Image 1 (tube, rainbow, N blue to C red):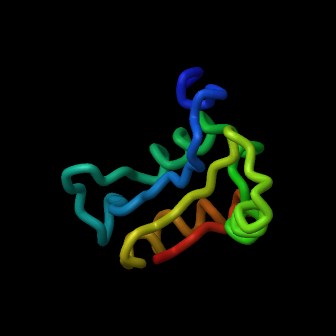
Image 2 (image 1 turned 90 degrees about the vertical axis):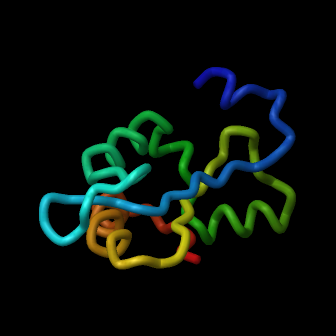
Length: 99
């Protein structure tokens, strides 16, 4: 992870998530993660390094993003993201991009 947050990066980081699974309505599939995996990823990145989407966008427009600043993005706005990821985001008070 040290390399990931090195000063050698000349681009901004968005960490994209897609499929989530649980033991109920959402089946496990290739590349899917569960709620516990999602918590572990956020803890690994560090909540303080994750910018809310509105803050990330404003800093981007003003060319004020730092190398370690990241945002979370969710591709396709699928139901498993709403059912599994969104409650985690709400609990941790993280605003993210949903496409």
